[in-house]
Image: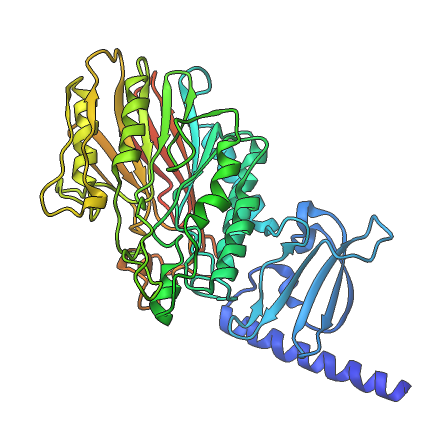
Length: 466
């Protein structure tokens, strides 16, 4: 038995030395000092090994039943053997993944990074009246696969890590602009994914808005499998919106369409739903409209927006939705009513009165017939429109309204067909700072500026004038 243990230790050391040589050879330098611990055993590690907060830990290296190496960090200050952080060796990466907290699901290296990011942002923004900070994340595309270079479980981790901003005392409001899930898993799995995302995103410290994206109806799964609709009617709405509408800080006309507003000082933020698509099934139980491809807004939602805008005197208004209603040339960027929505916003800024109409070729479900009267609204203007969906950063100003597009947080590795040129150029990789993306937007009415601060696969700072 002793001979067996001695022989096993020799084999473990040999395997560990071989892996260490490969890591050093291929990566040039170790991503973190604890990558070098590749032999099964227990080790004392501390600040010299870049441990969480520089605390002393017991590092345990072990193999699972499949022979995969794992590392676990247990605090030395406690008698408990339970690990606080763990990670596994990934042959495809030829290294260990970053440590994740077993309690929060967040990587402590990302928490450190976000703390430094927030510290830097705080130096560049004004505190006080009419200076409002909005956290933005979009297009996480959570999918039930442990992908190392594309959509997968990392989408949920990005939401958990974005929610760390709640603890850093910088946000007045936070929002997810949609495409929470990729919508390519079976219905029950995608429903479970939405619940996990909802619970990871909601907050008792920061008011939040949950916006629906074009992938959040799970139509990608339906398309790939040619089956009946995998989501029942209003499934996303039933999972996500009750928590959102329960917040005392939000106002709303109804709880039906995803329209809500948040006020702070003279700033009003309004959420809209550009995936406002009727749920109509054919004789096969399949949807008439593929929500993934059919972006639009409908009459009832537009009516709610009109009612809110008519009660917005004294407010500088920012709108949020998943998709941009118009493109940089002023053309319709939604399949239905995008240009009409923009024209309504222009009518508000010009304090006009009128009636909305749709063209003759629009299906009955998307026709508009809304009266509006903004002539009595005082000292109010729509200053900006924030959206995701395009998986790029972009901006354009049309009729005095500043459109700002945010990059996707979902990992888009450079070798995938769906990865656009914008993200290919970023060469995004797992556990690197460009794996994820998120933003803090400062709206400063006194200085008449909107500052967009990005982390990860995002521009460090963009400035727009109000």
